[in-house]
Length: 312
Length: 325
Image (cartoon, rainbow over all chains, first blue to last red):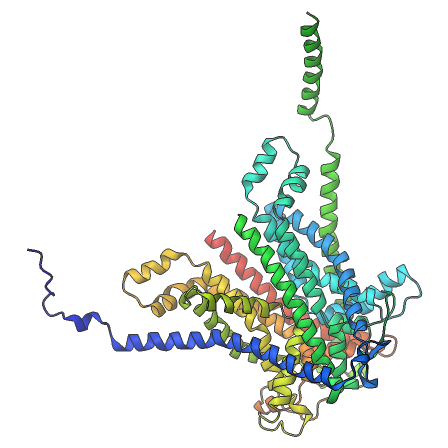
């Protein structure tokens, strides 16, 4: 007879395990949950801090102030199109630089480079990615302006939106390259083999098979790049306006200007710091705008990245 | 009969073409051109990296060797030939300490929770989405958070900070940057933990280990190199950030109090940091004095720290990737 009889000297209490182990287990669980909760709290804090102060700003000024000739908090002028158009110009130039360069680098690393070459070049790009943006700000101001900008237009001033755009573009290259490369290398090898098997050359395989197959990921790289470029501060702060807290509206990339990010930094920069009132709240308003723009861009990019993962 | 002869002629023609293409008589012009295009793209990226380094390293090294150790031990100055980065080093070091003490444990703990403990439900997915979005928020926006909460609302929270500079203290700066890198730490640690093979965990459960014991003794040791890489990269990111520090209210000139490198009082006092000093130096006129050289020298000091941290992280990752195949 197979009866369920406990072995000698063992009762149910022994199977429950030590109390200390259970206690430790739940203590650990609470600690870890708390840590994860911290991140939630932080994101709510950001949104609330921004919304609260931004509403005070909208409330405190005549809305007609938001449309004028310049963004100059010290003089109570808040032309919103100056920083927004500035951001668009800088981001556009940055993408003109970073997209072709980043894409070419990614295709080469993923499809053409031999493993030995790849092993050297990839870390090199990653080091470029690690250079702090303030360093690129200095580079844009002291190298890009005399060597590139003033070569295109000799009468260009020291501070220009185009120098800032090129600087931001350099900063964005590694990001676009690495996201694109991830997308390209997640395309299964069987697709490449099938294409070669039909007699296609390498260039045909790459441009007609691999790139179209990875297109969602490449679009994601583009959007993430835009999001990064819009949020970049120090390059623009140093190279486009010299850190001044006053910028006139301009459509020309060969003039000095400001972006949403640089305007935020400039209004608290030590030299002409605004410490209270409407001028200070204006930066919360810009911050909120920036937060939502990048939020939307990142969510869209996330969609595209997921699509690549789902297909393969 | 006319039919067969025409096939014969056509066949001959096709045969010649196939032969020609198989023996590779036509050069692959498009292929070669495409290859050159790709190499050019990569070359431009590498060229810019070289240009950035080349534009600062010779000038910077020159300035540092002129100044000797005084450059690192003296305070900032309004004279370009006597500038010192001691205050910047001190601020940057404290920011690093905040990141290590606050972000690393919290971030790794949150990652363990999300990967090992959390059930796959709507709340978990919401938290994960949230963290991914937080990682994409521009750094200036974190500066706004630091300004609104640490510098303004918590003014006077840290002893000694009351009635001075809106609470723009070293502690406020450290806390802001700790929050900035937290999502990055969580994401990289999560990826490292996710890469731990399932059977490793099951072996642990099989011998009766609890969840925490499996995590502690099986998962974390295996994920450690990946976690370390991620934390090093995020530390480098924090040390190089300038924009949030401007918003929190960093001082770019000479600071009032003269506390030493490791004195805790510094937490409640005004701060500056290397990236902030670089920003301020870069704004000085290029053609008067040695401001450009001084900027380059400060950049060399910052790059040395940041690039070493990045390089160690990348080498570490490559080493373990190779070992595990």
